[in-house]
Length: 442
Ligand code: SAH
Ligand code: SF4
Ligand code: F3S
Image (cartoon, rainbow, N blue to C red; front, side, top):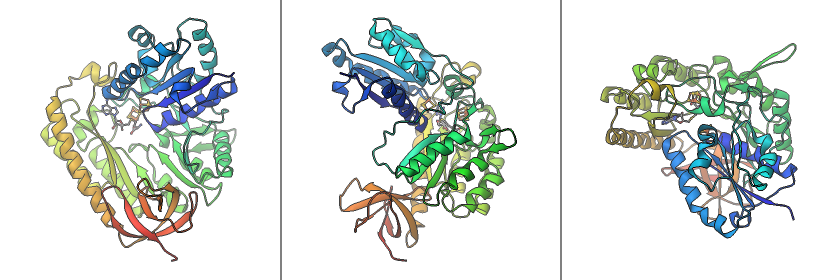
């Protein structure tokens, strides 16, 4: 009987895409996948280190599953991904439950490492690579809807944002061969998928040189968009210092490139941005937003923000709020600064904003963003949007749910439509998270 593997994924979309690569490697080695943790012979936890609370969650999870090991002493538990890379052997020393530790560039070694663990040795491989992109591996899709999927186009990061652990746990930036990206996307389309999200920490620095051709991100995006007009293309994340007008024109030219850009500002204060080593100013960020508004007028915009970075004053914080109001972000992910060991900020600056102030600033930011998001949704009422149906609405099986090109969730009565189809929906009202409407013939 083949051994069953269960994978649990935390962190960003990259980790979701990586878990699909890991599953593919293990199936090839003879494993079987299961959704039921209780019947697994191998449990892998794909982890995130971005903030301290992300790691605390994993420790909590390990405690929560410790009873499974008492019940089945054959069971092996592996920690993979970013926290594996950051803590290495220390993970095993801290928690005896862990048998296997594998970093993000060593997944090809997993079958070997599991064998080692089965022979009774603790198995660790956290080598980072300058080349690994898993380009030749066809990920085993683990999404539930069969409509939208992630495709990784690069790995690692060469920026050194002072607060960020990613360059340490994911290694140097490398781009994936465009031929393999097009092939994987075409296969997804042929299987019925209608949306892909191209993933990289900084997609604007995608770079590939063939014998006679330089392929940057704008060109890659164009290649993917040309696969079929019925395939929607999204991408994440854009870096404000690198996003080019060339890319914006490409987005404007293709109906099936979604009109949504995730452009993390992090802060609205040029002084803080400098300390963060983001390599742009408030004015530069505003100039890029102006360019988006001019070249792609229907584009939605979202951001990530950090409150309470080292030395942040009330005035700096107010500048973040005013930038958010000015930009009118449709959506924002907002975080309290969390010091990460080994980063530049941890080595050079004091984490000097008290926890209570970080929290106060975060709640102030969240309530401002709630107002800004509500305003952006109100503006959509009375308009008609093309919606890609993703499945039944969570609340009612008589309703379907999908998204607009701008990435806003729309719920509407089912009629005789199904997931994977495009429909035109007239928006009648909005709630805090959703647009609500009816399918229209127009
Ligand atoms: N590559 C992307 C972001 C990846 S991490 C980019 O450059 O935008 C996702 C988000 O987590 C970041 O945008 C940032 O807002 C947040 N983040 C990263 N490190 C953090 C830290 N130490 N404390 C709090 N938030 C952090
Ligand atoms: Fe981290 Fe900056 Fe790289 Fe994003 S661009 S992953 S925030 S170092
Ligand atoms: Fe992603 Fe977390 Fe790693 S955000 S890259 S899973 S540290």
